[in-house]
Image (cartoon, rainbow, N blue to C red; front, side, top):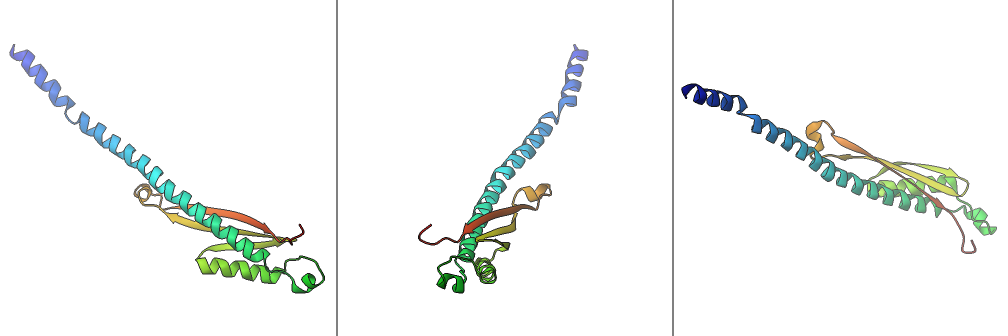
Length: 142
């Protein structure tokens, strides 16, 4: 009888801490999922803000018409004024980006970083954010 009790006690000692390992691993997995959900949500919000900024900057650039061509009845973008108008809008909202002019199209690409809250604990300090929008200069007859 004593041998049997000793065997049970020895077996119980060997299994101590097994639940602790499970709890630790489960907690780490739960934090990783929470990090993806929370920081992913912030990244999607930052992407939407970057898209809004790119769209508005492209519109501002497309509105910078060549005054000489406009007097002749043609709707043309003035490339220098378009770049300045788009960059001025980006500076106003605190965004960084590039402006490209091709014909009557103004394309603005906004880039940035969204800092992470939970994922920084596992080495992901930020998530890159990029959005591109194009606006076309048209007149009322188009």
